Image 1 (cartoon, helix red, strand yellow):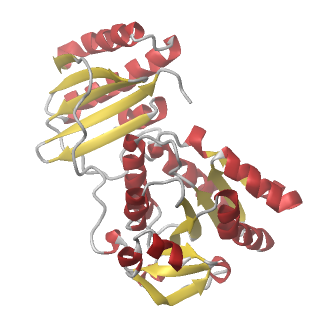
Image 2 (spheres, one colour):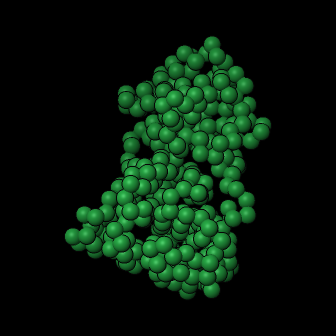
Image 3 (cartoon, helix red, strand yellow):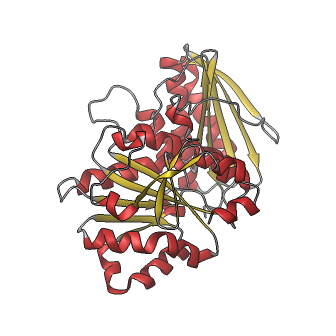
Length: 350
């Protein structure tokens, strides 16, 4: 497998992987840990490189899943439908021991993936304590905006499950289908790298040296005619009317209009409460995607905001959570100078 990286020009990147520190992934599932620093964490977050479609995917996952089943571990596989079919067929009767989920449906918005894994870990905690998750967050056909959020998602997995119950998360990445920059970026988000059935310590794991900054950077400027409104607390009704009228004019279906209006209303309300009492709303269309953006003077510092279900008595956190549940993509960029939250709604959901 190393030859694949060299042929693709990844040699310099992969040389950061410690060749000496490797462990059997099956042994790791049964409780043995490597001598790497990541062994101190109960969460094993591992990236699987594969090529050659279903064949390569099965080479990297089938033995691990069968070993997990034999160890009476809970197994949750969230991948594309094609990969799920291949793994089901390879497992035969054992497939009924695995919970399969359609990642393009459940994880279209990458911010919804961590809550899915949190539910899995919570539910299996009543069992024997062993668990394996396989999640393919990035696949061919994702937009550049979605892939940017996938990178942030991978970094936040390390935050969400640090210090929690022990479990193993394997993230497959298709070398044939994804662009090189996606592979390289994802590599920096994983403490462990997998190929040829073994786990390799990743010396290029970025979060080992500094915490992730999920809201860093900027978003590309809008491309298309803008609807814009500066608002304060007295203008929330006008915010809702603007979004509703504009979305209907773009022929967004009725239920989806209501979802978009609710999401933007929650974000605007957050601006009033936490962003200096005012904000700016901008709406535009790019191809078949409607985008609405709320800017304000607030600074978002909670890395998992919107990615953990708020408690029933929580006084904050509902707005971003609802936006993530209602929209096809949510992007947050925030600095001490201010914040921008951009939501995407597909006119024809995939």
